[in-house]
Length: 497
Image 1 (cartoon, rainbow, N blue to C red):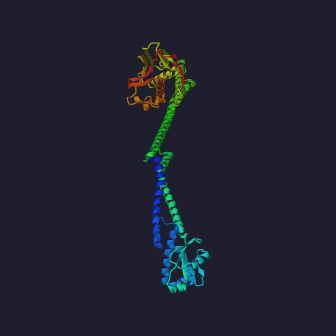
Image 2: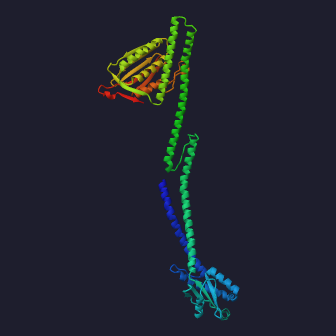
């Protein structure tokens, strides 16, 4: 049941149940009070009777009781001490009192206040068994009929009942009824509130317990609340927990990647620095004592510094990749001329390393692609740099082949190096992944070169994939969309990502 429905039902119960219980209590108390009057006073109390009628009946029934007691022991109504006790009993039990008129006309009354005129009124009236009413003092009265000899000894004895006695009984009844009604409303509200609160507080405690578990780092604690009203909250909490868990996993992976990157960069910087240091010491110690040897030493030092410069540039660029802020400047680029220029620059470097470059192009000179020349040059350098780094043959070669179809141009970069195993091939574009790192510790790289290649090519709207045969070489293919002749040349844009 939804909270709104649950609260509505609780409200209706709190409104209706006390009313039903109070009415039922009133009926029960009414019949109890009626039976109590009939039993105690022998006075039939009907619904239509007013308080005066009840008081008159009470006066009649009490007078009969007194008459019966006098027949048993008349002395209890003649002695002063007994007289006071009897009156006190009558007042407490029947809200009535006795008035005694002796032979001298003196009147003795009980604790109820009555005027002297009331005594005179009684003296002037003949003895009667009928109940009479004296309005100034608001009392009903009746003569106690006795045996003649007792009458002579005691005198005239009148029982009076105040007309408010029935009202007093009714007031007690009302006070008791109101107290019971308040108690019923209080208990009903308390029980219903406890029931509704329990259905709300228990799930809240479960959420609190789960939040403490998450706070303490237990991201595997699953919140499970069966109440469908709390189900959306439960689902949102579990989704938050899963996202936090995924964030923790990503953070841990990032920390591990950064640690691995630092380790790889340290290794890659240490290797050329060691070589540079050795060759510089050779020059200082005049080990390179011929012009040819000095030139070889200087050339090696130059190549090593180029390698370190490329590694530092790669690390700087990686920081931009990691924050997704690679600066692009897209222009319509003649792809054939671009790759020829890159091939010419690369051929000089490969020749100095004892390798050769093969270039072939099947694309017309007017074919354009929308690209950033600087970033595309970085892509080629990273791919060819990997080929040079892992080359294991004395006659190493790198090939660049360009061709096209109606919509795309394809640039294939091939080498005759050691190749990549079938198991490692799907992961070579993953960040920090290095295939066969244990067997290539001397050439170990940072593991981010090909991930940068994939990032840049995909930002150009293209795709990159690789194929390889172990022992024979690797081929990496780049796909780029051809810029149509009817496309607006205003597509040139500056994008800072």
